[in-house]
Length: 381
Image 1 (cartoon, rainbow, N blue to C red):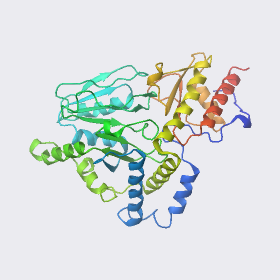
Image 2: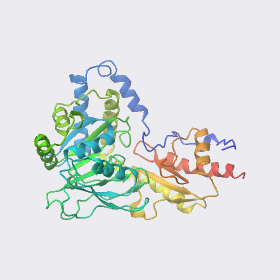
Image 3: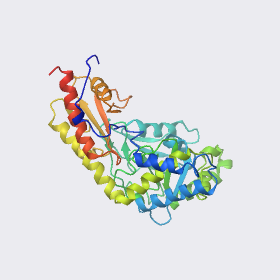
Image 4: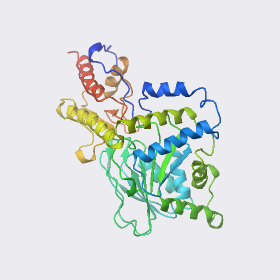
């Protein structure tokens, strides 16, 4: 971009952070972090102050997701990327069927394909910008797909593949960018895993999994048989190790304690405001503002064309080829509006906007005004 973009102060959003992860962290979370410093930060994660924070997170998530009987919340380090390897090591017995419609669903499937002790996965894929769920597959013992594809802004409804439960298969759903912002019935999953740097307004490096009794039983059986089967399960990738530590309100190895404090404050805020129902309605309102604006625009269109597939937490907007989306992104950033760029590997001329619960719906409306003004200035009007 060569043109200097100057947006009037009175049209700017109050907070210009619209990242799809890491996402906006509220000031109240920072305050909670500061207040925790004397007793929590810089102390052992195996002692009461930090373990109390973990216990609070678990209680808060149980309320937020209306946890079914017998389901447990498990923590580990490494983020969702590490959890793909844990799932390959400890949940997939032999064959998994994947729904792949974006970068992150594809990465989990690639992990399964690379695992030397698993059969090649069965892939049900579709073009980016659409969605595809796995179908009932002979011998599949796991069905997996993303709740929300962060790379494209396409989202799915969560329900078990018909016939899969009767066949004894597990349902594993990647909720990384969906958890906390999209509706979900946890009982329709056996493993619903996510990271806290999206709707839960924290930093990355941690994975959280909500697991059913069937998933716990599956992992225990696979790990117990690992020596005889020749399956190597490093301790860091052992779900059983993570489960035993989580039951003590700690992680196997040292976590980023600040991440826990930020997440705990966010969960408390979400629950005080009305929980999952409130947060999903708030995200849907913000997303609707963007989709409506794009549909009425003469230079922007929603990337996901089918409304039923459109995400309410990550919104991708295609930009007319007469304009460079990168110039719009740069012009916005010049005015303090950040992280509206497309997913880097998608290689499309588009904007991508995170509208997680922390983002104020009125700031989203202001963003659309700022995009229009930026385009007007880029066109020399």
